Length: 170
Image (tube, rainbow, N blue to C red):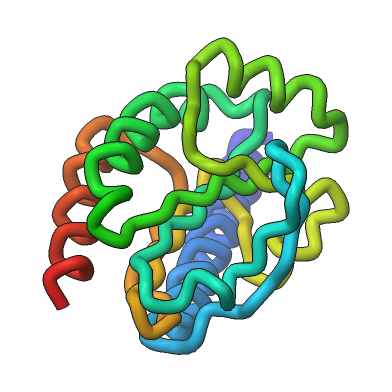
C-alpha cells in the first residue's frame, strides 16, 4: 500500500513537471513573435482591436473575478497604467468570466481605470494559450510578444514596471 502511494505520487509529480516544461517551451517559442491580433467587446462599449494599438507598448492581463492573485495585482496594474499611459502604454484587462456582472462588480470595487475586455467564449485566451490565472503578456511597439508571466507573486509589479519602461525607451 505504501509503495503504491509513493509510485502514484512520483507519477503525479512527473506529470506536473512535464506540463510545466511544456508550458515554458510554448511561452518561450512565443517570445519575439507577432502577437496574435484580436477584437473584443470592451466594458465601455466599443470593440477594441489589438492591431490598432500598434506603436504602443501593450500589456494584456488575462483574469477572472474568482482569482485571488488577479484581485491582488489589479490595483497595482492600474497604477502602472495611469503612470505610463501618456508615454504610449496601454493595459487591456481580458476577463474570462462567463458572467460579466461578477467582473463588472470587481472592477467597480477596485476602481480599475484601464479598459476591460470580455473573452467569455475564451477565443483569445485559447489563442494566447492561457493556462494560469492571471497571465500577463507584454507586447512591444512593433506588435511582438516580449514577456509572458504566468501567475502572480509579490514583486511581479516591479518586474512589469521595469519591462514596460525598457520597452517604452526602445
